[in-house]
Image: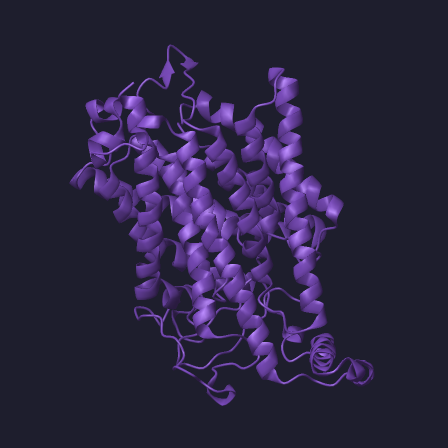
Length: 482
């Protein structure tokens, strides 16, 4: 595999688009002979079966000649990859909502659903307003490698009905599809924080924090890698975001949980009091939706479908992504059986998610077996990290910190196991830089909100439940009536 750090040069208008996760130089303008063959065969078959043999022969000649495919075809295929992958990642928002709804108590379900639909909407607006150009400066840096010079300005799409000549880069994809795809990653970061701080955080302070996280904190640190900043220049590798997305959400969640404090009654007399979730069926459904959406998360991060090699690599990425999830789930299943004498469904669900996070930093280069092992280590981390956090009295309602932070760190380090271009010290340094920035900036925002308006609901509201106290409605009103 060629270098994962080639940065695509783009025109100043419309705004720059990303070269994220390794849009390789060889992937641009490469021959699309397989696609031409399929098009010729299909067209001939539809026109007349008798022409199919001639089309096949023509396709074979094209393959043999290695004729270059017009850039417009590459543009269309890459754009389709972004759009389909973006739709899959969008569906992950439903997965987060269902997972959180199933793992919080009955009296807080409507609040979690409200937070998830609200944070997705807020992320869409602030990422358009400031986040996209902060994250992708192209050649315009205010501080080289650190701060975008294109910021602050809104994201701009192509004109309606552009031709190939009007595209900013005919060998890449539509700017609108790139924006759509990148937005979904931004929104996922805020979803991670939502679950950790559930059942005791006020709605509006949380939403204000979400706006800052998705508009400034996430895009700025992402520019250091995916925008071609200083971490990228050092050789930091993070294909689809074990650090850039998942550990950022995990660091923000950890910081918020420390400042907010645990739920009432969670820790008593040195013991951890179980607070079972409302619906494990919903939690399981949410996990399966996230698993499904992750194929777009990792597969789309190839950022190219314009060649036989790119298409094969996307298939490889999806297969490894699935293997990572399976490894995490199976390891969590076995460990909970050995440790607790019974399998723990919530640990298995989080084990699968941790496996997905672990393989996200490098889903292309491992073999299927290695992908399963990398995911399996992530699953083991969850099983041991959940009780570890409880011993520290860090209350993480849905287990997001072990899944996204601990497994995200592990996945970023594991890149060196399969990608010869990875450098361990660079990976460690980048993890520390991103972690320090996110913790410091998140703490500043949470502490300001705490001083200005308070971030925690009253004891009465927490006891009653945030559904009635904050929203005046319940997800399960029939249970309240008995």
